[in-house]
Length: 340
Image (cartoon, rainbow, N blue to C red; front, side, top):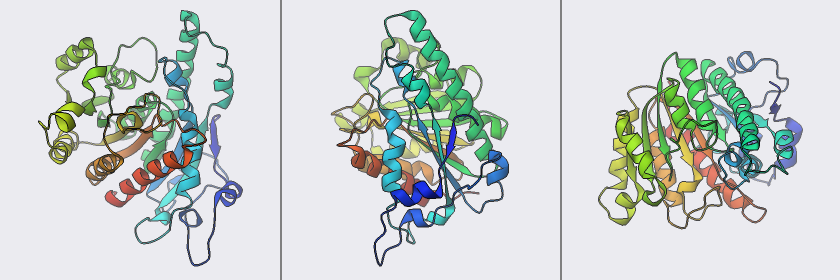
């Protein structure tokens, strides 16, 4: 794959901070020394999880959003590799594959004029290229009997995750999305706001549950559109946390019941977590602990087929914070999940 950069032993050693009397997570993960073909390289590996990053924010730019999500993978690696390897973390069950890297494409967009339709169209065409890469990688990992954990990038990558998972399973999949936004906007060219609507329109997505939708940031047009689609359900952040009309734990069970009758994906948009630097950072959202409880609650089901954590946009000051957040969510998923 042209845009896949495999994580190497040398890079791992550079990031590891060893301490006497401790064993770090990164000391026990598995790597692929020489990549030939994804499926062939991992099908016989004694691992359950394949972790990879997506270094892009092109889909967010195509949606007129705040850039920076391409930095989340590097921030995560620095923390993930240096947590403790112990009976709780299962490092030996994890392959760190590497990242899909779009640095060259990002650099070409530095002077782009977002007010010009031709320029926006060009960016959205680039998102289509990313879609193909993500689809192929996710599909290959799942066909090989492993569970992908996808880190970084914009929520445009939900499309590739869903399509890849559906193709690997020869049928539509369900998805639950922990998000302030539905990302079910018009099919106007690919961007971070319409990954789910494209996946639905193309027949890859069946049941779709949006968990914690923000009432102030969902248009009436979208609400009407979602009501017409009988396989979409949602709750709102305000109903759960402001008006206390719904119970958080009960809603996790409700969401799980709605999606778990077939293979399903877990999507986590960091926009939904309060005060987390992201493409649409919010002062009012779920706590980190609630996000972790959500991943635990959904991840424990054997039909949970992938985890995607996206839209975090770390700065130099906040990269450790983001790295710790994403690492907690990764390890919560691994602890909860029991592959078939």
